[in-house]
Amino acid sequence: MVGKGWPTFTPDGRFIIGESRRVKGFVMAGGCNAHGISGSGGIGKLLLESLLDPKPSPYVQSLSPDRFTEKPWSWETARAQAARVYETYYGV
Ligand SMILES: Cc1cc2nc3c(=O)[nH]c(=O)nc-3n(C[C@H](O)[C@H](O)[C@H](O)COP(=O)(O)OP(=O)(O)OC[C@H]3O[C@@H](n4cnc5c(N)ncnc54)[C@H](O)[C@@H]3O)c2cc1C
Image (cartoon, rainbow, N blue to C red; front, side, top):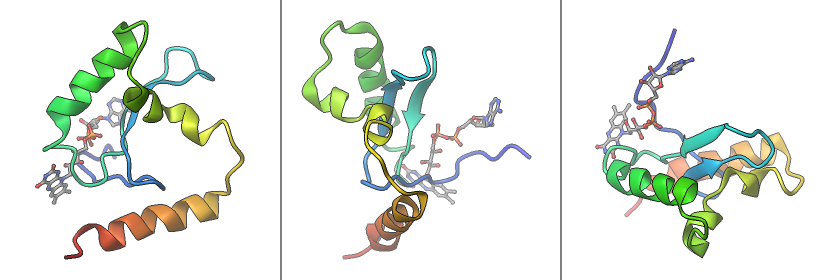
């Protein structure tokens, strides 16, 4: 089954945007943390910047998928942190 529209959560609560340095041609625009619809225009803009701008802004660079692969991390910790983002998302 192919799911559509599921909210996805990242351990740091931030989008994942850009091409992986480890897997050439693998481009991500996800990790929307439940606001993928409202954020879609910005995500598209930042994705283009990450792919076409020879010097993407520090902000765009900080959203790279490489932030999860360039340091050791445990799946369980990442999962717990992502769950925490979800648990507090609707908090007031
Ligand atoms: C009930 C509900 C309410 C929501 N309300 C809001 C809201 O009010 N505001 C808001 O901003 N966000 C909301 N969201 C979250 C929002 O829907 C997601 O953040 C957004 O859809 C994520 O976009 P995406 O492009 O990452 O993934 P998706 O929208 O899931 O797109 C992924 C696409 O990839 C396709 N696909 C999957 N596997 C393959 C494959 N192997 N080959 C080819 N294609 C594939 C799928 O068919 C799908 O079209 C809501 C979500 C839900 C479930």
